[in-house]
Length: 277
Ligand SMILES: [Zn+2]
Image (tube, rainbow, N blue to C red; front, side, top):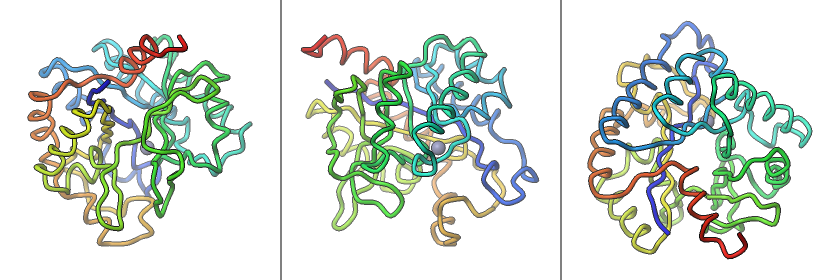
């Protein structure tokens, strides 16, 4: 079963940048820009929302809900899972859930670990999610990676014994390197012909393709500053600013050829066709 899964990781990069709040407030405008495009194309997306961002912009979150998109959790304070104990993760998630539910979101089904930080070392996170009533997670990068990665998990979407569906992020293999081709920096920087071909190939094999974008991925007016998690490397930071004007153009082309769906819609289709249910 295939679909192009559309998602935005709704976070405020200023929260982790030195003297970040001195830079302009960009999350509301960038989010509304996504909403306008999604409305124009008639597509539904999943917004994985950081709790503190929901508390900062409750009206913005309500607009997302009113537009018919899905809200899901992305950590209350956007802490990578290896920085949390199972108990602290549960508390962080409960805060994240309350922040979203306060905006009238209703039932929350999904979770994405900050920085795809769910690995073999933090596999307990799936059990905590099941315990709190989540249905799915899109938190695993199924390859060796300098930051986080869980190569042994495998690339296929599957239901774990706890009942949680894990939808690992879609990778493309290059010699010596596997990258999440349909999201963030890679979606902007890699040649589009390659991305499109890879998406088409995965969909024709019946596999879902997971996309993820951030507010800054489309922000062509953002000031220059060093982004977090790049080890202060200037050449990597330069990539953060490349191709931002291309994101909507590329998505527009993709939505004409392929069916977009929210993660939640896709998972409920999976549940209906799963032999166990
Ligand atoms: Zn994030």
